[in-house]
Length: 408
Image (cartoon, rainbow, N blue to C red; front, side, top):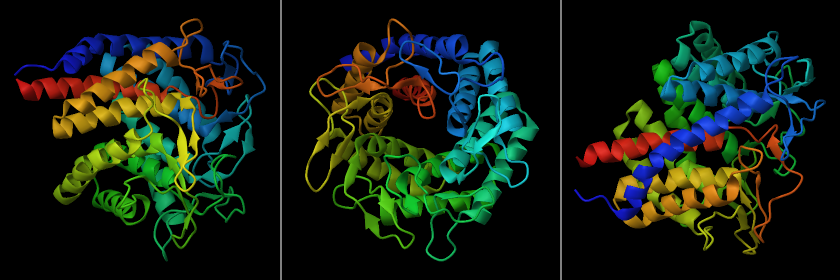
């Protein structure tokens, strides 16, 4: 079988992906570790300046734990396992709420509780990270903790009347007036983003703990996506809903579109449900096609668009570029259409040319509409972590290997 030119380039890029994993890991191990209080610093700017007073987040530390556990599983580098263990210790010592379960949203640099709300999104990342850490180390306690968090979410956050999961609670799992994940989000009871990452977390846990109740929860989440989140006409994702599933707002998130395209399919494959596997595979290309409407001529993916006004947020953030590379390659694997392969290759080219901070390491937060580096953004922070870019490299390595093995 002849390998197309773009595919041949991605074969050559495999070495680049290994190098990128090492470069990302080196930055975090060199610049982000907090030698005094453990874990990683809560905030580092583009020039590698540490903001020592910054809060340390559950999402940040969970994503560091997941990433370095996965890096270790792929490379066998013991330094990555040790970095993962340090993140695990910080999470279990400071971010876990031993009294009421789950994870605090933030703690101080020293590890003292700050914002003690229970954001379901953050706890989902805890499940995701603990599951991957168990796969990397066979640590039985980590698996127990992941299972306990799954059971906690099912008992506290699941809406038994209208279905789906509520966004957030106070420390004692009582309702909150402000449930927003971030200041830019709408204050709504149920969001696509939280459900997507619950699905991701549950499917990761299923690899370690393939129990019927977990498979049922994954199937339920998939059903919610096709019932509410995926627009049957446009195949973009609806982002915000109230508790009764009434849609709010008209924003399109191109990065979430293309991320969901492959994550839904992965979850269906994990539980081995033939019906869901077929449905998610059939829809993955349509969702990736919807996301591709946000592509710029240079191969980069714009951030958001208002579906009603058509107004485009012409910023290119780091994480949609990483997700585009995976989602477009996944579409190529499904269809064999080289146009998807070209899009994946161009995503990687755009990342290499525009996202990597060649002077100070890691990736920039993003680029403005005119191509300038976005100012005042984090290199590391509550949201800026090694997860999207690190995971994309791991995904491409695995997928290119799978594609070439099947073509022989």
